[in-house]
Structure formats: structure tokens, C-alpha cells
Image 1 (cartoon, helix red, strand yellow):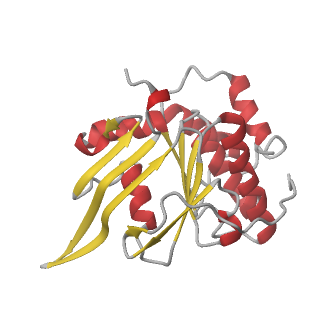
Image 2 (cartoon, rainbow, N blue to C red):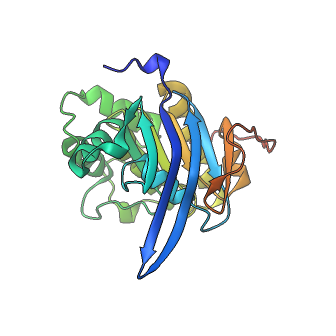
Length: 243
């Protein structure tokens, strides 16, 4: 068993990915190296097409790299089979996307509980479910279907679905991209709370400097490479609690 106290939550080593389009090879990532500590909240910024989402998909085991390593708690998932990577995702990772991807026929609670069943976390107590729902400000919305919820409320349900099994890592790809400024701030505050209160490691892709300011570290990408793996960020607006 790996001692998580002595390893990074996430480590990419010389990570590269090249897509093939016919006879043409298109590099998406080139020799990326980065470490994310346990309980850290980082934001990855950069122009469209710079490789941000590709990096997230590699970290989450959705894609195998062309070369290099991806270590989660010291385990190299780049060497695992598809089914083994799927097992790691179900155990360790929660995803939050720009599109909420909720099932329209289920209530908010139904969407959340379905995720619990799919991931096989039957030992999570009803109190655990209610704690997450309450923490995300959804207690009075649990019986509503997605069409009856605002965009911000739908994203909160999507976040609850992603974290209901208490994954150690949360990967968020432009989680506020479809929201107005008020709902964006509420969702970002939720992510910060998950990081601070549940000690979840969060990697968030964003193009928004205000969103990135919620993270403890900002990583900039350009042309498939990381420019500043250890930088801080100076943009610090005041955030009010909106839920």
C-alpha cells in the first residue's frame, strides 16, 4: 500500500500526447512535468487549444499518454489497462464539467444517488448524502428535476454527484463556463469549501482570472507546455458567500 503522506496526489513526468489525423501527427502535450500536493487546489489557465483539457483527461485516466507517466498517489496509471484505469477513476476521481450532464428524468437527489450506485459506494450512510447536499445548499431542491433548477443549481447538483463518493481528487473543466457571475462565485466558493473542509485535491481548468484566484496555485499553459509550475497568482477579489 502506498503511503500517501510521502507522495504527491498527482504527478506528471515528461507527459506527452500526440494525436494522429490521417498521416499528420498533431502534438497536444509536450514533456509536461507537474506535481500537485494532497489537499492542494490548483487552477490551470491558458488560451484555447493549449492542452488544458487534454492534461485533465490524462490525469483522470480518460486518455493514455503517448509517452511519460501519470502518478496518482504514487501509482503509474499510464501503465494500466482501460478497465484498471476505470477502477481507479471510480475510486479516486470526481469530475465536474462545464455541461452539467444531468439525467433529465431524475430529480436532483436521484442524479446524486445514481452516482453513488454506479460507483458502488453502498457504505456511504444516508447522513453522508445529506451532509453533502446540505453543504452545497441543495436541501430544498433535492426533489426538483434539472429543468426546474437554475444553471447554478444544476452545477451544484453536478458537483454533489462528483463528490458524493468522497473522491480524493476532483477534476473540474471550466465549471463556471456556462454560468453568470453570481452563480459562478457560488460554485467557486463550493469548490473552495470542498478543498478546505474535506481536504479534496482540486484541479480546475479555467480561462477566467477571477475563478483562478480561488485556487492556491495557478499553472499557466501555452502550446502544450506548462510555463510556471510553481507560481502564485495576484488577482484577489473579495468573494461573498452566495448560498
